[in-house]
Length: 67
Image (cartoon, rainbow, N blue to C red):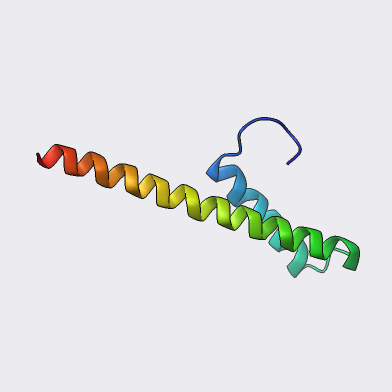
């Protein structure tokens, strides 16, 4: 994604799915493959970090509600 807007979790998932479909369909040539695998790696880390941060925020809110 070459835009300057902030990447969302949903956009990252959609891009991962798009890349995986191209890989599974043998639509990528060898020159693109490494680049796309690298991008998927970045997107997966982004999603994992986003989920972890969201989980921490939810736990904090729930703990505050218990007090």
